[in-house]
Length: 136
Image 1 (tube, rainbow, N blue to C red):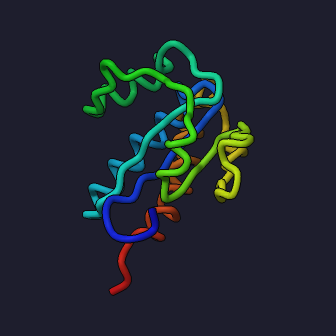
Image 2: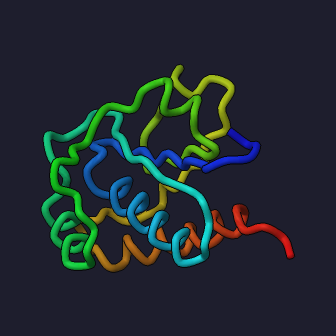
């Protein structure tokens, strides 16, 4: 979806419960702050039954409502409909055939150091959002 309209970024991590959730929430927050029409979705290749408690707690404290949201398995339609696909240490295999995938494999585990993981994600999000910002 590279033309007009709302661009969607797909964030995928192994369990769809921590890094991808955090990246999607922060992407949407940062996009809104810049007045950009963009959205993010998160998924996993081997989804957990629920969002990581630390991520849910931290984002909830910031007003991000994740109630009723659960990790889900990434689907071919997710990949096909995305402006950009970003993975965290996982492979999409045939789902991503012919689709460029940006790999953020060096982001630390959220369970090891939440703040460091978030800082690494947000630094990359700033660059990604820069690609969406119209030239003046």
